[in-house]
Image (cartoon, rainbow, N blue to C red; front, side, top):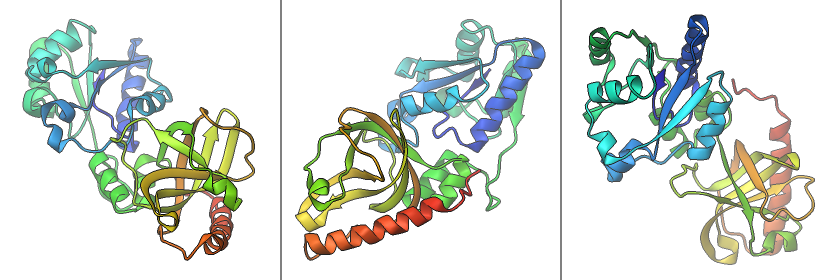
Length: 297
């Protein structure tokens, strides 16, 4: 078994998850990852709860792509938060899941006050009869240990390359296509207005981005405005994707949008004609960026 929040399911998480799955296969046991919903800090200290790299369904989709046999989602409640590490291990991991061995990240902590670090868990394991294996940190191309906190910091500063390096994939969001104002269509650049399920989802700074869109209708390159629409005096923050070569009615279709690269900042233009001229340049720049080989691991 392994236990964690696994926000982002980044490269460090993947190593822990795959080592857990490999060990289970060698021992002819099932491999299980336990995660929580909501994020523990939403319950323990809501004011300190970070924005999320992956919403609940996004996280489950990523975990489903590993070689684990099972993922168990525990509702994180004040009662669960109050358990000591040994109570959590005994009552949840052993009594409920019949755990035989535990794999955790090198900086892991759970139980009341995150007191269940590597050394305390090894002491609990020696008393209760299970081994604890700590997995070393995975380091990014900058030599620093990969962490959800570091990836959040990179995204908040618009450093997509560093975030992509830590995640091992492009950063993305998912949502259903909703109805917009129809301005893009009038300008010759129809857009899909994607509605993210929660405001807790972390998004990079406002701007225009080259993106890759995946949907039940196929994959499309495109460009996206993340932010307001100052040319039209609209201060509402939106996610408007112009998918190249996509046609038809997309309302209600669920899509995933990956950030490929930032093209420019969001700014106000003198009028629709100036905006259209810029959008044409944006489309050319986005297609050129999409044509480059991906450096994401």
